[in-house]
Length: 300
Image 1: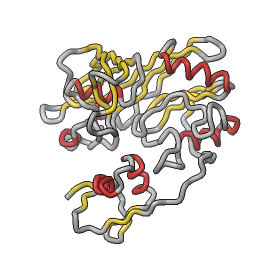
Image 2 (image 1 turned 45 degrees about the horizontal axis):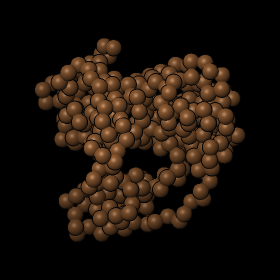
Image 3 (image 1 turned 30 degrees about the horizontal axis):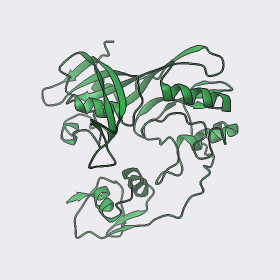
Image 4 (image 1 turned 90 degrees about the vertical axis):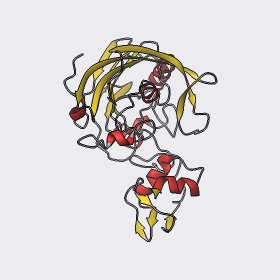
């Protein structure tokens, strides 16, 4: 027996995991004639699996009336508290229901700012990561924010991660290179060369649980924004993010009550300088309800 998404990956090695998950969620995969309901369902070699590849979707995203949790908005930028599960911009397997689709309905003038496919997008969050994300609404703001996020000058980003176990120390600083995994190109890894500098300052905020199912809330202040940076760094401490299907430990996830429905990572606080007015602004997105059972009392 193996997971359905892994079986499909054997059939379509060029597909990404997110595309496969999108095909399953959109009802394009059947197992023995029945529509598959989960990418992680178990299948056997004798099962008959059919994958319907939908026709190409226009490159220009369409506006969609999707509710947004707006934290701040003016003529130059909008800051959203992104819900977990929402993809930031259209990609294979996720051509609708994305943050960009919602933003184009909320801000019609956003179309074309910084590009047609990803209007206004200056940084991203993983699909299952919740929290603060900044979007430019004017070309001048786009240029200023893109430069700030690329250099990490005048940007302070703080995440809250729920991890398995507790790090050996109460706080620390991780600085190394992160690049593509040498074997699994869909994963990131700490590498000795051909990577980019990644810096995470972390501090344990609380711990809870028992010997068989203990978790810690870790505050991560990042000085760089590499792909999967916090997830890779926490795993390197032996304390992977709870619910992380790529770098985590599913056996430990199963011991938790309730079982995590997604990776427990939240873009919690953000400080930046306004791209056109030069004002220092600070924002905070409340800790999501689904993270609270594992967080304990946040001490910092």
